[in-house]
Amino acid sequence: MYTVIFVTASSKEEAKKIAESLLADKLIACANIIEKVTSIYLWEGKIENSEEVLMVIKTKEELFDKVAAKVKSLHSYSVPEIISLPIEKGNKDYLSWIEECVKQ
Image 1 (tube, rainbow, N blue to C red):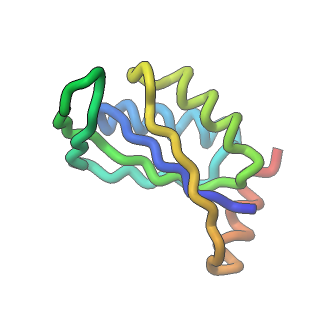
Image 2: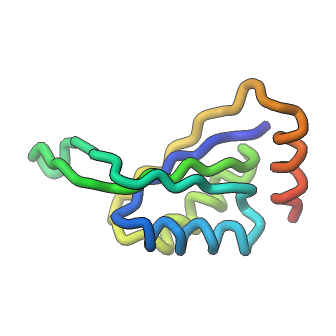
């Protein structure tokens, strides 16, 4: 029913722009931005090492496709990380707050 979505971004400014747009469209309840994440990954056959920021986004599972489309439209990467993990349990008051925030 609820989900956490991870998105990496190139900068805090890019992450804030994405988060604010998602909030304005009532697609998410919250986005935490964690700075200075070191990402080591394989890209086009080479090992890359980058400093990024990580967004931890809370929303409803049914909004994932809309969130992903909006992130892709605003993101600087050609293949942005947008992955979702279900929230199996949580503070009922917090989950109710998510529900209220994303009412369409």
